[in-house]
Amino acid sequence: MSDTIPKHVAKAAEHAEPGPHKYKRGRFIPVGRRDLEALLARHVEPDALCTMQFREICKLLEAVVHREYHMIAARLKDNYATLDPDTDVHSLHRGDLAEINRRSDAIFTDAKLLLEKANFRALPRGEVDAAVSAVSPWGLNLRVDLGVFERLEIWSRGEKIDHRVRRSWKSWFRLQHIRVPLYQRLMIVFRPRETKLDTRGYIANRIYLKLFKNIPEGDVDMVLPGTNVQMTMVDQGKIWFPAVTGIVITIWKIIKGALLVAAVGFYGLFAYLTLFIGTIGYGWRSFFGYKRTKEKYQLSLTQNLYYQKLDGDWGALLRLCDEAEDQEYREALTAWFLLWRQAPHDGWMMEDLDRSAERLLQAELMRDVDFDVSDAVDKLIRWQLLDVQSDGRLTARHPEQIIESLREMLNDTALS
Image (cartoon, rainbow, N blue to C red; front, side):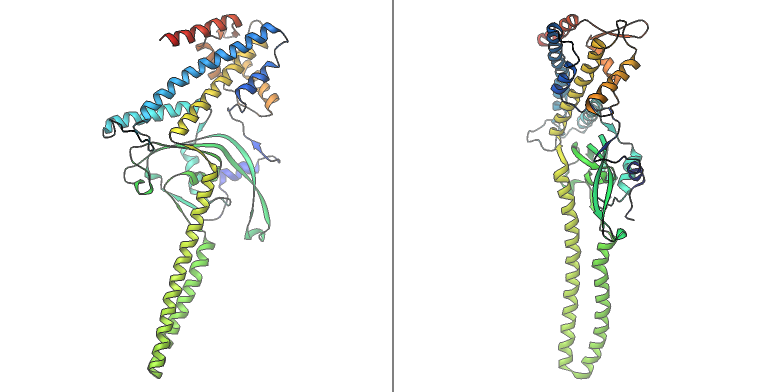
């Protein structure tokens, strides 16, 4: 395989603008809950009643969102108890394959829901295949067998262009600056195929989740299990060229030694044996040189994953629940606030709300965000924070109505 930049990576790098980072447009809203509340509060008139109502709605809305995701987390915990590879609790369903398959499907379904709500996107199979088959100049040369997976899903969020440096013989080993497209977050969810990965520490009929940060688009294969490190042609040449030339020279000397034995007797035999032992030692040295080079590559892979892994398995699911909850709250609060404070009396069409939200986030965060307006509006309708007029216009309900409605929802939950 040639040491070339993957086509889809090179294309993204070519169109990147100068600067330390160039972010691609995505739906992720990169601001914390409290920072978003403070950001929006700056757009509230200095009126004590409005400020108090805004803070109360923030508190109640946060509680309603948390209630929904607490229920999802409880369902995940129940289903994952049988499929968690790290659990130390015995499950009564471990040997029931039908129940394992049912729970496996439920885990993948809930994980997909959370990933979508956390504004991850599923990587298409073509994009995965391109990354797996490519050799990036800043990563490792790996070989991946996708047949080891019973089921595999890869999700990404937050794409940006980073800068890295390298030396290459093509540039006479001068430092080169390369623009590298990265996934800020990369999640892999997989179920191993039986007997395929068990020798590597993975167990069939379990579900594994791995969350990574800042993974180059051309190095997705680096985070997949079942990879084998492949040495470059240069490293292979360093090992095999001396070995082959040494063997050829040794064979020639053995032939000469055999003639010498015939000519001078005992002393010739001693020299011949010394030469033969030296040949074995040279081959042994070449073999261990090969092993050391393989270990160097494996160590490089391990070190990369050590610093880029964020979480795994049940911890990754909990983190995903938390991030999905945060995104739901940010989207709903932003959409409701704009309808409350900036929309005209007769409201906005959905397209108007979308443009207004994206302009606000662009101005405040200096980031081009693709606001998921349809999802935000669905949430506001479900939680009774807005009304939809006959012509499709959206109008925010009065804060006092919203506070009463949210309190009723929370009280009903507490009583049920």
